Image (cartoon, rainbow, N blue to C red; front, top):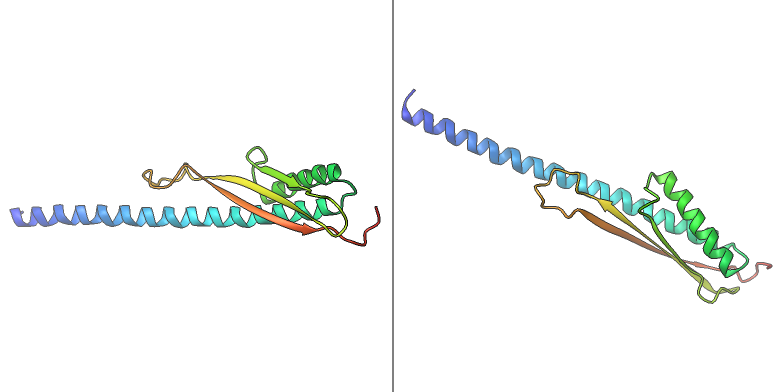
Length: 139
């Protein structure tokens, strides 16, 4: 082989390496985006179901308890880790015709993806749901 052929083979190997790394990073980005989208959808569903359950309670204390319980049950259905789930039920001025709010936070881990440390270790997804309390519900 001539020197020119050796150089061309070396250049081709470097080009292949650059393209392979670029494709790997592109695939990791797609995986991270999919993971975050799935978690965002799940956290939104958890907040919605927790707020619905809390709005049907008779007292503010019961609303807080029922909302947190429903959030944990719904999160398990979505496959979220209950140890990382943070739920805050704010009954406000719990009264007929009022509203209550549920805020759910969930850190999504990205550190297990091979991203060459270009992605953060975790991204926290947050959802807030405000639910009206039925003004005609008997207590």
